[in-house]
Image 1 (cartoon, rainbow, N blue to C red):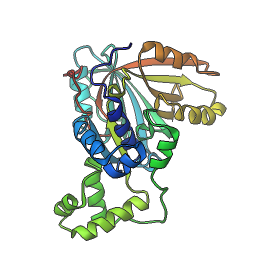
Image 2: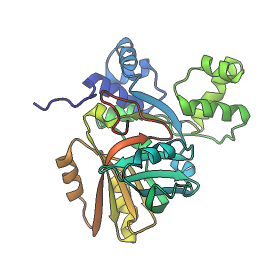
Image 3: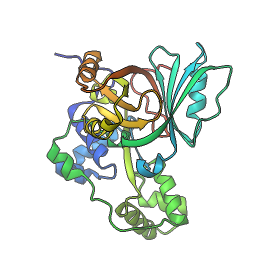
Image 4: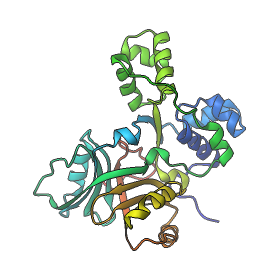
Length: 313
């Protein structure tokens, strides 16, 4: 029998976290109904995993990633930790990974290439993001059945709404913790709780509150995080990008400028699993595979720390 990896959750907790991936605003009662357990059981699971999982509001990639740049930065030996932390401290930088080997950083930044210290960098490849087929918020662990996912899936947005100043304040607060309750939001904004409830309900209904459950893949026994940089015939990009976005191992697919034009980020159980994924790619003339040695920042926030120290700390 395979031994569990450090930080891997029990099956019930994996299922509850997976429910949050589908609907980060779902309450214990709703999750319990779909998973066939009691609300008290779900509440206990949520309490157990509170330190490992964080639900935040993220922008729709069709709007929030316009003008995004995918960076590959080669760094002098001994300077990667300092540069990775400096990039992670920038609000316009959403993702920062240190690739295995410790001399290259991959990052996603909004608004172009951030200023980088010349005495730490040996080369920079800046790839403009042309199209987002899927992003981290679209990834599902695969623990739930298709029927459970469909039942949990929030209703599609309806109607139009232009947020005002109070709405924007609420959205900023939900970007830090999308599950913040009306009472806490009312205290933070100074608005009546009844007003906050109506405003949040309207923001959710009109599609302004898209949630992302930040969860380390090791919670699901997935020990390898890798990027596959592909060179694909331009006419094949739409179909291959859409196919990869539906793949259960893939947690992001971007079409970019540059010598490679399609990047897929994948979570795998181990390196043989990664090999199987790469060799399953058809009609891809060339591909480079890089393994992530450490996730420094995810969706604008530091990832939760699990059982072992972060490799950069």
